[in-house]
Length: 102
Image (cartoon, rainbow, N blue to C red):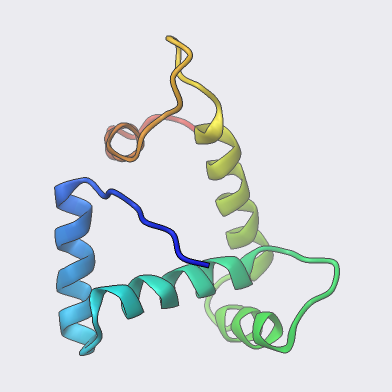
């Protein structure tokens, strides 16, 4: 499946810099981040990849808590804002930087 995302300039630049440091293309770096984030989410039928990622992460933090945070963030920011429009990435970034409670 192919998707196209329009990223705010700051996020795009940060992802590009991270990709450059890792020696990856921006597309490959973004794919890996999505794979890892998805692997953190709890699933009834855990795949070997999910198990490996969650086991690795649990050496530093609780993988279940990380997954819960991801799910809460998605649920919180998937809701429309006050004018009924969906929250966009720039708005989400501004809210998180401001320290808004989730």
